[in-house]
Amino acid sequence: MKALQIPAVVIALIVLAAVPWFGSDVLVQFGINALLLGVLAQGWNIIGGYTGYASFGNSVFYGLGSYGVGIAMVQWELPFAVGLAFGVVLSVAFAILLGIPVLRLKGHYFAIATLALAQVMTAIVSNVKLAGQNIGLVLPPLNNDLLFYELALGLLVVATLTIYWLSRSRFGFGLIAIRENEEGAAVMGVNTTLYKVLAFALSGVFSALAGGIHAYWVTFIDPESAFDISLNVKMIIMAVFGGPGTVFGPIIGALSLSAVSEFLSSEITSIAGLFFGVVVVAAVVLMPRGLADMLRRFRTTGWRYFAENIKATRL
Amino acid sequence: MDLLAQILINGILLGGLYAVMALGLALVWGVLNIVNLAHGAFIMLGAYVSWHLYTYAHIDPFLGLPITAVVMFILGYALQRGLLNLVVRAPMFNTLLITFGLEVVLTYLAQLAFSADFRTINPSYAGNSIQFGAIVLPLARLMAFGVAIVLTVAMWLFLLHTRLGRAIRATAQNLVAARLYGVEPRHLYAVTFGIGIGLAGAAGGLYGTVSQINPYIGATLTAKSFAIAIIGGLDNPLGVIVGGLFLGIVESLTALYIGPTFADVASFGVLVLVLIVRPSGLLGKTA
Image (cartoon, rainbow over all chains, first blue to last red; front, side, top):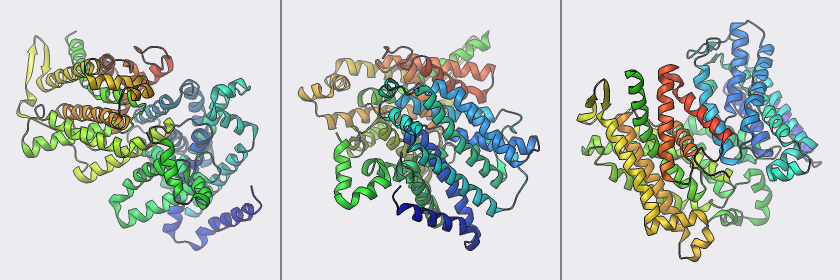
């Protein structure tokens, strides 16, 4: 990290942490959502951005985290923290049990297999008695947006520090090697199966924690919303728009797209959903390496940046 | 025993429809190397085109299929020519993402234009059926099955025996060599994608006669089409018939013995299992 960046990050963090004291209730609620989406985007960044395995099923972890908290607090009357831990355990178990077979698949096959898993989970959870079946679970209310905001911010900081560690550790280099050339990585002595499963599980831990916090905050979960497939859309788009495989890209993507989406949905409700689709189509064509890369190179290349991206991939 | 026979018949009739759903996906994937995550959304759009033709112009859904297919072909051609051709040489992940984005866009536009209400295409003969002893064959499903099989076989013959079909197969095998023999790739890619989307549209029209449609059916249909293409392999259009029948029967049996809510679980479970055991498809050549 460059010398100038550290103070900038610290100041941004202090401002973000202080938002509940000067911002309105609406801003704080928007903040909780945006920060949790940031955590999801960072979680996806570990498996999709660094390891190069495009998971379309990370919403499963989010749902397991939600239900971990829900089941622990409603059915067993345990404290919130135990519920979070339970959700994490469920996610890690899922990442190991299904990750080992599914992570053997490459490219399209992995993407679709995870998409299919995400669709299966809704149907399965809808039939589990402990999880309240179709009806869902109602959690004990805790009207404390300040707490949820700071929890979400804290989680995002931990997730980002983890990714920062990835970007300069042996483990992280192993993941990048897998992304660039998996056979090459294996030849160099990277235990690819272990690394991939660990990355999948780590990605799942953060998604599950985000899901758990969200569940307690909204105090109600049902299979449709907890395992919402469109959440995958959002986290992938945010990570890719910001810059997959970078430390800060997914956060920038999550906060900026959340803000634009929130603004659009308050102005023209029907356009807001369309927005994410249009952004991802435009981003893939014009800036496939994300906002972070564009900002860095736009200064030297100007508008040619977009033309060059198109030229590189068109038929 | 009669119940089991009836369930198997239902599964087979459903499977024919599944086959034609997957046909376009398999074609685009095999030739263009694009896994079109918006495929189900195009099926959904095709169903709406058919529904509009039937509701407002009173065109029989089966007679209207060619119109639906042509409309969808034009849409597919334009999208490939104007947009997807820009990213065909990008890494696989980018083409997955862009079609994923298209899915979101198409679903939202459909919701704005057609509302989220359930629609059905109900011609006067929809309730008719043919009786064989204890077994009932619903007429609409039987016709949809027949059309689906005809379309799939026609596609197979087209790829084998026509000039355009040979150009498409040549491109799938080796783009550079095909180019040397005079294939114009931008046009040919657009035609291939157009045919894929036209088939998806026709499948949607058939789907609308046997099931309810709404703007959100796309994602599930994409995953099912993918499962069928995987089971059948990409080498031969007739593979999707096997894949479709297999999936249709598995779903029907699951709905009977385990419960209707588990039908989708079964089909995706099959998908994941097949992927893990034989990623090149049950019938496909080993990679």
